[in-house]
Image (cartoon, rainbow, N blue to C red; front, top):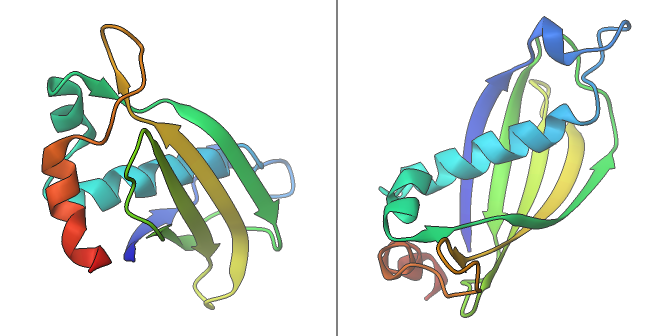
Length: 136
């Protein structure tokens, strides 16, 4: 299993009139944390695109348990429970506040696709090599 954590400070523009994070911003937090998790492995989305592979989101689920507030420092956790063996990768995500309270859980499914043909493909070999040690 691969896990990673990123810190994100809630900006004023991401909140509603009550100072609560607007629900759709969690999807951006998830994306930032996923990109940083891949970067931690020594690989980036830009590296992947240079191989001709893109990763569109095909499904998102989110469960809101507690509100995040303006200026909170959030910890966004990324969990990859299985090493993808085909075209699909599934990230589980959790958002915590500074009191370590679980605020939000999410699940994001992406496909590996050839950018030119828009056909499904497998994970780039370089990324698979980076993830493999976490799944032995």
